[in-house]
Length: 286
Length: 330
Image 1 (cartoon, rainbow over the protein chains, first blue to last red):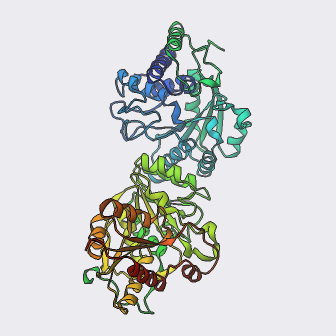
Image 2 (image 1 turned 180 degrees about the vertical axis):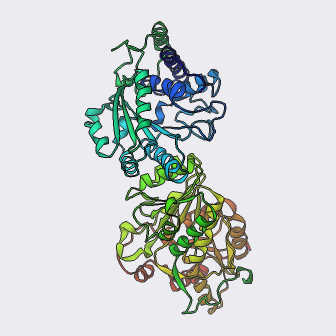
Image 3 (image 1 turned 90 degrees about the horizontal axis):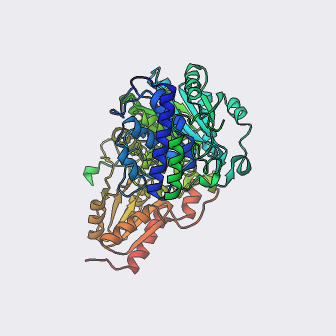
């Protein structure tokens, strides 16, 4: 993106992305609320600061690659892409509808810029690792990065740890994982369903550089990615602690919102909350 | 048929035998020589899947994955996203036996050209037993949209198929066998993805073979000729997309068909031909292959005998079938 934005502007983008998510999900009548809202700050940081990309040239051959492994959170990516200029905001209202490019789970072949088709959990890290491997060892291109966003419940999948071992072996320094550590999955809290801790220790033991950040602090997100790019001997993972449903009081921390959309009254309330929080999302619950 | 340029040794004891997977190894190395986008990934079976030729010639484009078949095909999909043409190999029991969903989502639906190479497929794997005798792979792969499924008949054809797949850059499945089997084609025998080939003309019955079973069909046809039965042999190395025209032309001519494969007939090659015949011109069709069972340990010869996948068994079944089923549409 041309011209860096201030942190205040990025926080504002995150609010706009959240508002779009609420509107899309209300219109769609199905879909996931908690994950996308929790990832809004990370996606604002990615699309408006971190990624090298061009919304007008989604296939630009110098772009950074961004893989969304937990495909069910795709409303946040659709919203971020629309706000970044990949397509009109109006198209967001076609989410999950027949004939839409915005499928319930993302499809690369339908929407330019999507990079991979995902939804079934656990395969994004491997694909990003394949991209990073190609750049590092075959194409030998520096300064191009493969980013991958993963959910925490998704880390139950064995495929993730196969990829973690692979990236560790080949020291894929150009691979940067971001884990949405919101502690919920469909059946409840991650530590009840299938404990992930010691999560930092797990990644470290697989040969990764690990950072833990507040996933709602945009400055921290940008700094952590910058640090990850500076690590040359290891792949990097950023454990971003987030609040599921962030920004909407009645959704926050409640795993029941994992796979549910707001009805119109709830959407109205959510939009009101987000509107009044403009410019001060950060710090609201800290 | 003369334009098929089969070896003159068909039916002779001194016909050259070679594992089909060996032709794949040669073809992959050649594909790598010709095209820098070709990369190879293996799940800890580099020698037995015959990827070692490629690894030794193009080490920078060979990726060792370890025993991790889900990672095998998804890393391949990632390489494909960067413009590469990956061949991802392991034993068919695990690839595509274990990683079907990843193949479905990240290769087929994602439309990424990756060739999934399933080595050591079929009952003829032998002593390793049922766990390693992959019989359901054809069924698993041919139901996937965007997927091309190739089962070469011999080593030379495997080489040609590998080169063709490297050039076409499609999501594909290449099924290979472990044991040495007769090389009945020659350098001049045509191979094209999506084509079936009439190898022997006949009028009483069509034997449709895929993989190494085609050679057994050719021998069965010779044996049946001695009994005055005229059998047409059609070799079908591409199970998806099927060459409807060649197959139906032959079946319309003979009015009866038998499919032969070293796989489960349910959903397999026999299943594919049944679907075609049912939709175009329903007629009596017998399916020879594995019938809803698992294999067991034994020598390849013992197992092929036991499951009726040798020329004498095929000839006997053909005789019985002809005796009980009138020719259709004559």
